Image (cartoon, rainbow, N blue to C red; front, top):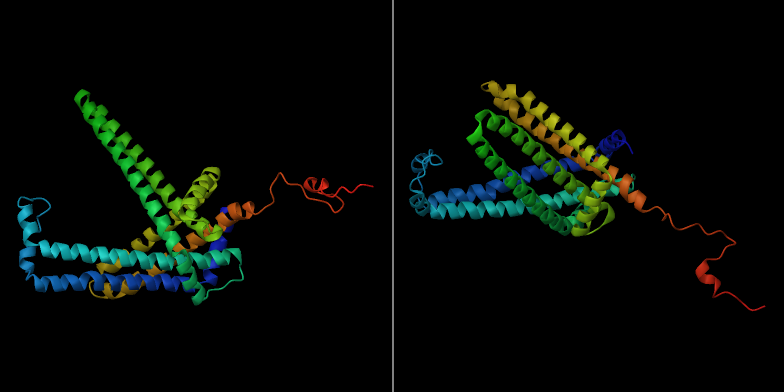
Length: 331
């Protein structure tokens, strides 16, 4: 399957199941309301309970640059900091759980449509798929999180090594240190970008393995790493669709910038424009997932269902070798 076929079929699949776009957009609204409920309301209550004054808070505007009495500030606003931390952690937990559940439902519906193009969106099926894929996606997300931490650690080690090399070069020649710093910084940027893109591609193709092959999180991770190693074209497909998504998002931001320059009408126009642009981003995100699933299904799942190369078809007059010894009858 070519890249064009995968992307074109991805658009068709999402257009047939356009309700998924509304669900993803509704999840965004739920997350916004949840932020107000789990973070905004507790903060307002904390301001009242602890008797905090906004005028005192404005005195801390230069705090990041002039921290001298950090212990005194922490002691004074300890209760407020605890409420803020607990509220934000609860919000993150709820938002992540809801997001994984809805993403599992959307991925499950896309996977069913990939396997059988006659399948259409059904709300009961959506919730059943979200329930079925929730815990596998939780485990897979934990594995991907560990991989991201490993990537961040490796990049941190590289960055520390670059700083050491540049500091040594400065002692000999300043020009060499500048050239070496630019070269190593660009090299670190390219390596980091490659690591990040590979990790996100691993996430999407691993999700496709969980949905389409119904494997566990750890098995899906191992199979996906082997799949991307055998099929680097799959990684290039993700780079292509991800680049298109970034360019579209940049174009939407650039197109909406003039609205902020208009004093009153601009603010009125900017709100519906942001809603439409976010809906378009949800749509393109689902198209990316559908294209990845379609490509993975055609290059991995279908091929794994083909007969083994070592087995030969048995004709009607032939008998398997394992049965010849049991069916010999004396004449």
